[in-house]
Image (cartoon, rainbow, N blue to C red; front, top):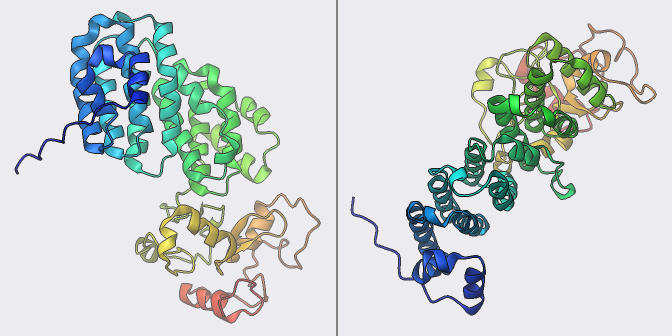
Length: 404
């Protein structure tokens, strides 16, 4: 295929941009024409300038710490850029910089000091809505973990830091922290034992999330932490005030050395047994709403329980909201507020619910584990999945979520 045309020349630097470029050493190191490209109003020019900076870095190694500082400033410009391709091109600068050992350019303390603002910006981009940005930011952080002068400790401390209050309702922000932290513990765990306490605090808060993906990631981080300390007592102390329904299965799983049953994005557990949807709803049991053939046919915009479809449900948050408030196949437990499958409410009351309130359900609910009648009208529930949906979604007048 023909080569794309070269980007247009950059417009002259504005007075403010020139002042900034002078103060951070960019003009001295890379020259007027290249720096003007970094500040251009045209994104393709900025992208090309990032690539040219990366190509120029090896020839500037004699500038030592000044090169590190200037390269970080260029990468900060890339991290602040709204164009994905510009940000991704800025990561080429990191690769070029790390091709030379940082110890040949500055001390380890100076390297960490210069790079810390960049680490923070990249950490924040782990919550970006664009998957390429998230992957790029994670790759940039992990590359620095492998640099002897930086190592995994500074990155781990940033990942284990408390999530800002404004981000605590964002499942993407949680996953953006937990998933890289899990990877970091798996690859560099021996150097991160000092992060067990802050990481467990993060895990504890994440386990209270309404998102199953968040709770599943938190559970996997807990397993990586347990591989470091191998002391369930440490976990018991840190998770002491967590709901027993969340805490106890995790502690048991840690002691047995197996993952706790979780699933992602509200989809059914792949093993065909009892799993969890994204809000903790039971999946499985004698009246399981989906058989294996149904499960395989579920679309990204489809509820796995009632089988309705809505384009908005391709968003995990929107699907979780449907589970939480609308799905007629699910119910919120009046005792603990956990969302469970209607057919599994009785089992939940007996085996999971911590029953923190005076018991609100009439017998035989919560008394006999073999009871599988409708929790709303008491009628025997059909074993056929389609008939079960018909009853709960349309026929049962006592179901508060009935579609009519």
